[in-house]
Structure formats: C-alpha cells, structure tokens
Amino acid sequence: EIFQTTKQLKAIKQNLLKKLEREKSQKKMNETFQHVLEIANKIRQAQEDEIRLAEQKGEQIQSMAIANRRLKQVRNVYDILIDVVTNEEMPIEEVLTRLEEE
Image 1 (cartoon, rainbow, N blue to C red):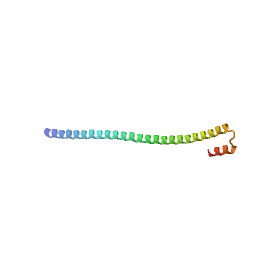
Image 2 (cartoon, one colour):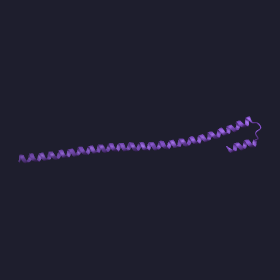
Image 3 (cartoon, helix red, strand yellow):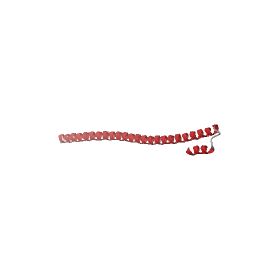
Image 4 (tube, rainbow, N blue to C red):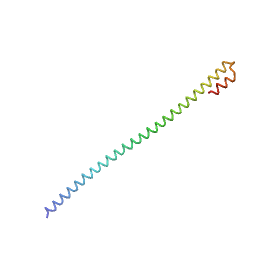
C-alpha cells in the first residue's frame, strides 16, 4: 500500500510539474503578446501623428501660397502707385485700368 501511495504521489507530482510548465509557457506567451500589442499601438500612434503632420504641412503650404499671391498683388499696386507719383502726366484712366487689372 505504501508503494502504491508513493507511486500515486509521484504521478501527482509529475502532473503538477507539467501543469506548472504549461502555466509558465502560457504566461510567457501572454507577455509576448502584450509586448507585440504595445508595439502595434506605438506604430499606429506614429502613423496617426505622421498623417496629422502631413495635413498641417499641406495647410501651411496652402497658407503660404495665398500669402505669396497677396504679397505679389500688394507689390504690383505699390509699383503702380510709385509710377503715378513719379509720372505726373499719366492719365487717370490708365491708373484706374492698371489698378483694376490687379
């Protein structure tokens, strides 16, 4: 009977050791999965940041283009006004025509 009990206890011990190894393996897989999940989240966040920055860049480029067009218009009007001041003989119709073109 003692031999039988010892045999049973060894079998129980083996089963517990196997279960412990499975639990360790499962824990390691869970930790690996969590690590992969964290990396995926960081990549997604970086992609969202990149998209947001690209949109901001586009908006800034568009704003600069508008500002440059406006600056060109102002410079042209300034040049016309300088012409009027320096050329007193320029007819008012020509001045108005040039200003309307701008």
